[in-house]
Image (tube, helix red, strand yellow):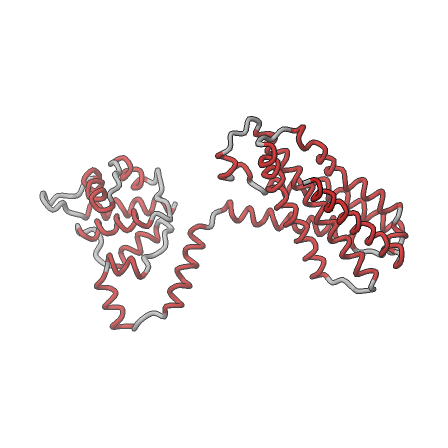
Length: 339
């Protein structure tokens, strides 16, 4: 509706313009010629017609074109005042002219405004400009992505946090919480991988990937790997807090979940990239073993329920943490020696 109103007003203002040589109403072809002379971009009379009937819409960020249209309309009698120009822009849901644009198109309005109201504070003008830029660039797709991430966060909180709230009241509670954990580890990494939008990544567009499906598979593999790595780091943090009898808080739990999501998202991008750098290809045979991470949650749930009492023990729990950390360090040392 906004586009058609803009088009109707644009046509009305164009017809109010007079050609400097003939004195007649300005045609769409003549308007296109003046527009070309002004912005050095050639638009056909069909493009002008499409704008006027609402068949196509000028991009909100194309201020050069919008200002060129306003300048021509003003120069040849269609627009009389700054208010007329802003009214036209408002009909198309475009932002009003800023100070720099007004200074070029309506310099007389700047001087009149200063005499009446005085100078506008620089910080206020910059704030309004930044807000307008943000709202102009905002789309339904951006809002949908924010909502999707919010769902991922709350689903992760609901499914994963209970498994980090030990010691549990009883074995039944432990089983229930680990069941939720297993469900979360199977489906949440899929959602995080789906938000990676690797399809539009400029780097991957430049690569000659023979099997694009492998790129998606390794992206999801990375999401699972990162999800479990982030979770186990937060698990050991929780275990250490438990050993020292430190109470957790809702904010700390939210930070834990946010950390898991961030690591999973980053890993979804890094895993296919690292494989490509290492092999200059993306073949399933090069990293198939790590698809086992899809089922790590199930294995960990059984292990945790089997050795829960040992893990929650002040002495044995601390010993298992020390053994795990020692194993990680030894693996890194061996890896560096091989290099």
